[in-house]
Amino acid sequence: MPAVRSHCRVFNPLGWWQEEDPEKAGRRLLVIGCGPSGIQILRQLWKDFEVTLVEPKDYYEFTPGILRGLCHPQHLETLLLPLEDALAGMRVNHIKGRVVRLSERSAQVDSPVHGLMAVDFDYAVVAVGSQYAGNSLWKVSGAAEADELSLIGRRKSLEAMRQNLEDLEKEQKTLVLLGAGLVGVELAAEVKHYFPTLRVVLADRSQTVLPVLPKDAQDYAQTWLKEHGVDLRLGCELPRDETALLKALEIDEAKVLLCAGLGFHAGMAATLECVDASGQITTNRFMQCIDSKGHPSADGRIFALGDCVNVRGTEMRFTKDIYPAEAMANVVVSNLRRLRNDPGSANLEELSSRLQEITLCSLGPTDCIFVRNGGVVTTGWIAVQMKHQVEVTKMGEMRQEMWGSFVWSLVPHW
Image 1: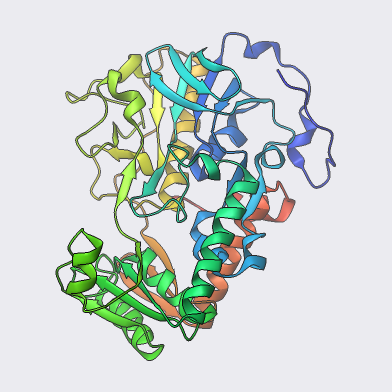
Image 2: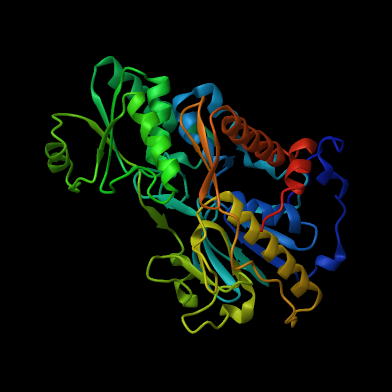
């Protein structure tokens, strides 16, 4: 077990617990992935279990802000944090690598340092997230983006794309964004703010932008985009071949970025028969992995949460956002503690069948749309400040600062 780094206990409350706990013997917890949901598992359970984390990256990133970070280098620095800083004070054995096969009691890990290795566990939590199909710049899952698994590599990758946007603007070329969902709309808005003379074309097969949000949000965003010079191409065919695509859009030459579609990297759990046709892990509302018949895999000792899951028995399809992921994390934490105290416990906590639906869609740094449960609550300055505070306090929590941790301890997830 690696040594715990020294740090200031006043600003890092986790530092008060640094003695070995003999009660942890035999309670081996494997956490796969350290995104917004995985890190909540670590923060809450490192004192209860002997925790091993498998995560290919050496940094934590606040992905909801990364589109602005791409366009604004100073802002990027507020979104990235060395993973060792996020884990400071916690007894967590971090293996930098990927789980390639998960069985009932052991995981096969591909580590660039140790090669293929086996990690045994009593309980496991899968939190591998998702990745936008178009470009790892929007979200790094660790499945294939070797150059972006280090903090230095991630910065260089975003800097290269930012330079590409600057060059496009100087050369008076065109940027085509495919997909007018949340990523496409936010990226179009950020690019128009920071590169105002760059021609931006936003294209989608849908007849409207933000198709999954309510109509008043769609209308607000569409009006904003038009007023700021974004060329909207909606309800049109979009051939996969780039040459045919540009011909269909009547554009001679352009840089094309795909901003739609999610990919999942849960194939390592295929042997547990809990991965559905879309590549997501199927769980019950206890957040236990289940097979096609609804039976818990590995006697209910393997849990999954976050973007990579499809939860059975709910009234809604949960959005791939931090809010539902943290609600799932609370359920997983509660159930792992109950199972630790009583391995045969049938008294487990269930995830609510319906959660709050909350979306903050940025339209550059000066405008935003706040949507809650199917309606627009507010736009403009108030919504901008809300998103800013979410980002600041969430990264504060990751840095283990008292204010950020206090704020998010008060936020209900239901």
